[in-house]
Image (cartoon, rainbow, N blue to C red; front, side, top):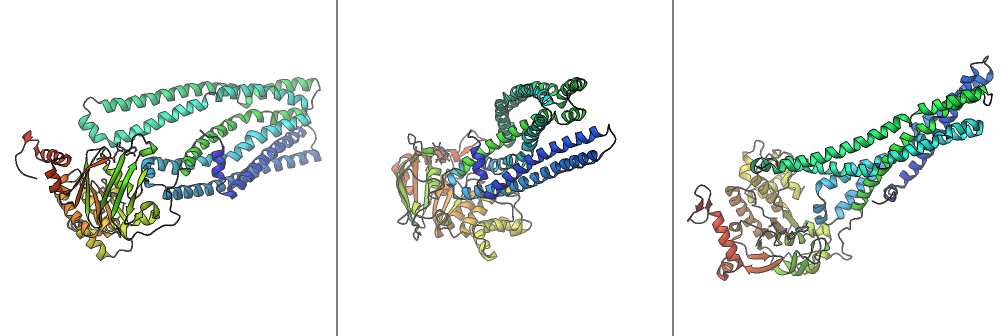
Length: 592
Ligand SMILES: Nc1ncnc2c1ncn2[C@@H]1O[C@H](COP(=O)(O)OP(=O)(O)OP(=O)(O)O)[C@@H](O)[C@H]1O
């Protein structure tokens, strides 16, 4: 993990925050000194009570009260200053993260995952709050107050200073034992708690699958195993904390110091080595160094958590944005050319996901990508909107290399329909209009008709104004998919990429989606990935992929005639689509 410079780097994002933190620290330190002076003068005021009240008493009392209220006021001001700075910084960091996310390759965002991005944006930014907002009061109580107490004792009564100093090595030793394994224990706890979080999400999300298939309860055992590890880690930490709290209860409380001061102080009083007022003074401020230990421990814990959070934020901010062209060009033609494209994930050139891929998709035609799982179909599709840049070769729109097109402009020309349709919680109309917020009701309706979606939309209780629910959960998979196709039709994009749009839908929806795709191809250049080959039989071009290569290309009939890889896949597809569970054998009928 990087050091504290990651925190200072984030603080430097907003210069005013740096000066406010500095001001907060100064106020915190002054608060510490003011409190000690107030306590010292109060001790003198109290000692005067044993004698007839003189002018001195009122002076000490006024000074004491002024010091104590000054300490309180300064601490409050320090708090206010640093909290305000902290909230400003949180906003600034979130803005920077949002800007960075907007400029990152889509593939990197996709790989980071929503959960991790949310954690950084929300929890880690909040985690920094401790370092910025809460550190300065702790610095006051943890450093300046004990330092001021020791200084006052040294100046006014060095014998009592020596007595209080006897406790310092004991405090040092206790702090050493209490913090010795803390970082390690906390790391173990964090790892175990992260594993539990992931396991809970996996377990809950996969509940239907687990209940259906997990007869041996392996998933449950695995889940319980992770919970057990977490419980063990917590027990070890608790045992560790118990030892620390024993030490804490014995030494890191004011009582032992006060006992020592009173024993030595009474002895010195009897020997007339110190005055009663100085004895009281030592009783009042002598235990402040020991009282500083707990705030210091909290401070160190807050700072180490803030360091870890800042590290994760900086890692995200340091991710390389998608390179933008120095002289961007505007595409006017929308045929897509892959020219000897090679691509490796994570720069792992030993295992390219795509190797020497070349093909052309003429404008307003449909190109289907088929092939076994892992053959590279999605990678081809994702390179077109620049989820990542190719490792070698080039991809062109018309004659323009896509790296020479501004990434925002490129994305305006491409509509992506994913396997998992993405809907926002709003109405059906709002979801279609995501592609063009200025679209009229007529345009939205036309897009829905072309996407074969209007029938079911009009059957919903509020028609186009029906809320789709969280993530579209009030609609079926096929309905959601048709809304995303309507969105693609409404968009001004000239290219539409569909990644298995019929993967999860019923036969009726599949037929409707097929018709929608036909309409789509009359208006746009379409690339479609399909496992259900019936949906792409009419494609202008079918490319067959295998292990990152294109092994065949042509129309459905041509490829069948070749009796090659496509014919083989087609054969498997036909066999599987005629398999009847109730008979347990293949049906001899035609295509379903
Ligand atoms: N984000 C990623 N990081 C690393 N490797 C990846 C990533 N995505 C895919 N791959 C690898 O790249 C290869 C091609 O994967 P791709 O997803 O393009 O195949 P596919 O033909 O679309 O598969 P499927 O039909 O199962 O979706 C595979 O070997 C896969 O393991």
